Image (cartoon, rainbow over the protein chains, first blue to last red):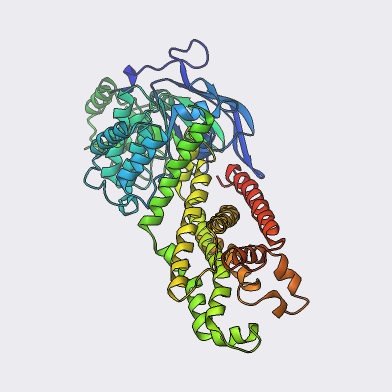
Length: 334
Length: 264
């Protein structure tokens, strides 16, 4: 689903839907190190929210605070309408957490793990068995149900982990780096699982260091860097934060390069590499206009690439770690 | 659901989980049983004549020495089993599932209570197994009444509970299984420094107070009195005081450690 048709409630005033998670000024330090330096979050019920950031940005700490594992040093937060500090048990009853490291009991089987969760959610024996069988089937674990969880592959462990989280029918699910360490196929399976979760109306807060993952799954994204939120919005809004796209033309013939530079006054050129950068939003209309001008001037470029800003640009621009080559082409038209 | 019934239900779920672990991986428990059984056989069949001659004033009497030895070894079995408790608690705390439990609306203490009850049950089973070996090689109680048997069982359970809470605390402060095993070593060394193998009056004067007032000696003397009819004296009270004291201390220590969030 394109993100433009997703509901994108406005922040703070005039909320379109009730908050599943809201936090103001969350702080946390471990010793001298400030891990979270006052973050605000507003996550509407039924949406997918991604906390995006490099390692050490504070993503996991934020999840640990919101899931009652650690207490914040400052600020306040409400999860499912309950205050974290005063009603942690009510918060716990509403949430499900799948941590970065597999939260399964490796010594017992997958099925026993599921039944353990059913017991801890106080389901009746028959209800527990029904839910277990249903979720094991849904996550393709029925065949492995009788094997110890420690023998599972990374992808299977992560699926069991999510299945265990779902036993209690949580309204809000925290997924801390759900695809870190998974192979590409398991990663896509996990994405599919997360998309299906959302269709059942649950709210998902996921952390990730992968920009494509946030772009793919999240309605709203907060970029976390050094314990503060550097930017927040939809993927589209974030992409708009940085300078727009461009077309790059590469030439092998210096004469053609000079002709093109003359024909395109908005272009900036690199005389040594014989390449031109022309600001262009990459739309069909803008591209045709550019191509028409090249045809009129009768110049032939050896290579034409269109670059639209992606979350990578946003991420590197916002987190100040821009060490890579600028303007990496994303699509090539030859 | 009331707090109490929630606590009971969640604790019994956690107990089932721990018993499942113990049943699925019995090697740790069985390994720990080897030490007291080996010591029993070593002291009876290898050192037995010399030890009993030394204690009995010159006449070797191996069967009398079996009777002397068994109460101490039964309590040592508990010490040995609780080393396994420290190791399994430490292992468990390094697992992601504990973090999951902490984010669930379950009774907080149930994780620890499950470990404690499971470990006490394991201790009882271990004591029964070592006791069976002792009976097989000739141990007999001398005229213990049913009430005395019951008191002996109560003492063993109380002692196991005390050592288990301490072991759980040790497991919680140990960063890994090796450290837990090392930290819990005193639980199996203390019986060697008690009246388990030789009477207190056979020890050097300067050492006797150490042996006399450590937790194992009064418990051993009490068990000996209940099973063999030797005088118990104040040892019953000292043993009970130790058990209650260690249980309270271990409980406070373990729950404080478990509830502190510093591990996360």
